[in-house]
Amino acid sequence: MTSPQVARANAFAALHVKGSPLILYNAWDPGSAKAIRDAGARAIATGSWSVAAANGYDDGEKIPLHLLVDIARRIVANVDVPVTLDFESGYARAGSVLEKNVREVIGAGVVGINLEDQQISDDAIYGIEEQASRIGTARSAANDSGVPLFINARTDVFLRSEPPEHPSHVDEAIERAAAYAKAGASGFFVPGLRDPALIARICDTVKLPVNVMFYPELLPVAQLGELGVAGLSYGPRPYREMIAWLTNAAKLAHGQ
Image 1 (cartoon, rainbow, N blue to C red):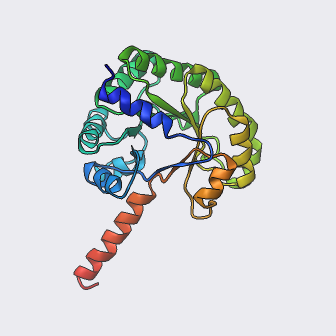
Image 2 (tube, rainbow, N blue to C red):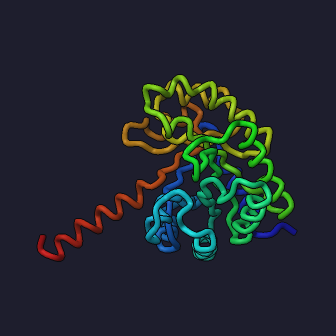
């Protein structure tokens, strides 16, 4: 008999269709997750920046892991769709700690994670082999748990560089995608990339479903689908726009 978590994990993987992007309008707590679900979302994704900011922390694994896991658990309990967690770099470098942490977030009920190749503490990017090994560790932990966790392997090669430099990073991104897929990744996330030709090249070359991050200048969803995109993440934008609205409303209430 299939458990509800396994069923949600399978459903989440099936939502990643090349040419028909899954919209992930990122949440930060149970209330925002419920609102996004009520608006028609087929899945809920958290954003690390938003979750941290909403709880008084900076981004970059500053929010304690136990609090992040608790938030994830409460989100899962409040929506009836798959939930994926922005897990940054997994709160670990050592494989044994990463394995433990992955088991912990699976225990919270999530069915997916973003796992990035940025070294949070050193402000650098993991080498391809080391990050592939980390993804393999996460996959083994998921397999042992019995949940087909959707590991969205995020590369920060574009996010850490300016758009004019992006063409020079495409070959590395493609190499990383191949290594990450072999290690057990389920998807490939390229935040920062917004050039249609470069997105199309990634989608045409990479076997994994490709997820991009929303920017105002990005092509409409239908055209992103034509490029081969399988997912569109809004990142911290929903939280920032909500805070901007709240700030303006509060100013009006206080006569400013």
